[in-house]
Image (tube, rainbow, N blue to C red; front, side, top):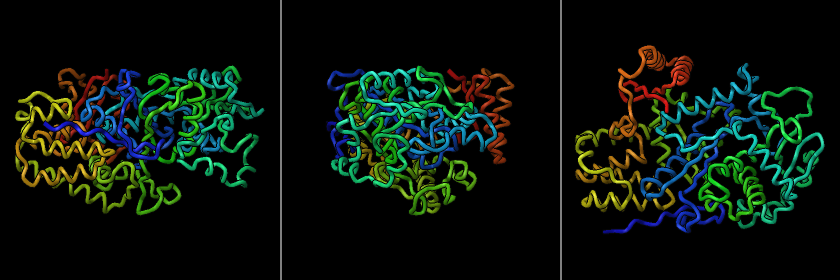
Amino acid sequence: MLKPKTLQVYNTLSHQKEDFVPLLADGKADVVGMYSCWPTAYWSPSIGNYRASRTADLLRNTLTHLCGYPVKSVMNITDVGHLTSDGDTGEDKLEKGAKRDWITAREVAKKYEAEFFDWLEKLHIEKFDVMPKATEHIQQQIELVKTLEEKGYTYEIPGDGIYMDTSKVDDYGKLMGPNYKKRLEHLNAGERIEMGGKKHLTDFALWKFNMTGKKRDMERNSPRGIGFPGWHIECSAMSSQYLWKQFDIHHGGVDHITVHHSAEIAQSECAFGEKPRVKYWLHNEFLQVDGGKMSKSLGNVYTLRDLEEKGFSPLDLRYFYFMAQYSNPQNFTWEALTQAKSTRANLQKKIAKFQPTEAEHSQKPLPATFAELIATYPAAENFLTQIDEAMKDNFNTPKLLSVVNNTLISPTKEELAVLYRLEERILKVWLFDLVNSSATETSPSEVPAEILALAQQRFQAKQEKNYTLADELRTQIQEAGYSVKDTATGFTVETLL
């Protein structure tokens, strides 16, 4: 029997592909700890944002189902205001959203958080084990700033805030690569004019004072007066709360490497005294649009709603994401999405030809790992080996799709059974027309009639493309203690835990 391949990941910290050896293997942890950043909830997430979410989902599912690791996954919800610029300047993002939508900043965060969860569900991205909100961890952020102050890593700019002194961090910026010190030395000297009292260009705010005299929606009390946390401090506070002072994987977009994640490493390692604070930094590359940057000014920032209005399913987009490796840039065009939709439909037709049934797949015990899959489906060993090699080569999803397409030319029943498991746990693009088979559905008799009526109204609103009403009805259902999930034929209603 073949042995599973060792998982290899591209570690931004070392800028090379490495064997994944978790803290668990060294007896330093009970689980594989994984933290993923999510953007501020002040605007509808773009398809670029959701590429990052799908990547986090892919990492977690591969670690759990193919590698067999116990995983604790955390994805933060940034629902506290911070400034629009990485340089600690500009307008508060949430207050900017409040002016745009004519509601309060807190209502903005709640609105776009609900939208985020709605679309995660449509993309078959399961919720993470912990999804902490920044607003519910302000005290932890204040305590972390206090620790850094006591250790002598901070200074105050009167009338502005408490700043991290990066000159006291010998390896600040190491995430940027082997030549990071030269990159820091060659920062445009002209930018120093805009330093606003900072001692060094790379210094960043830990806590900002509210000195305007005007009440802000998102301000908080602290030992240093009324103010609000800097952007970077929240991730260090929340990850340490749920994944301790050292953990295995920190995931995010490449746009976070230079500022956000470099700041996070500096403040965390100085506060907690652990190096490396995170063993593996994994970053997904940008999603481009028509070969260029996605930008509001260019009018090419698409949301999932934009795709649905053009007749695409969110699962067409999920399949599209699999067509490029997460660590490589991916170019979105409507033609490419059409190709993904067509390919997904063709795969569904091929599988339907062989008529695999749920009963056939459920006759054997549900295997949890690569080794158990081989033991359960020995005739599919070659197929399983190719899946294992693709996914453990830094999550090479284009290679995975190639393996699936080649196998479906003339699959055996054993290979179809393996593909069923792969679809259930990693692909999740409804090749078998699965309807969240792992979820526990609430029978209609257990759901109040008024909730079913709201769910039916929401279904009708979506059919009529009245997405605003559909979102409002979903919120009403959730506030009543239920969740509604879309299926291939309609919807299901479940009790919220």
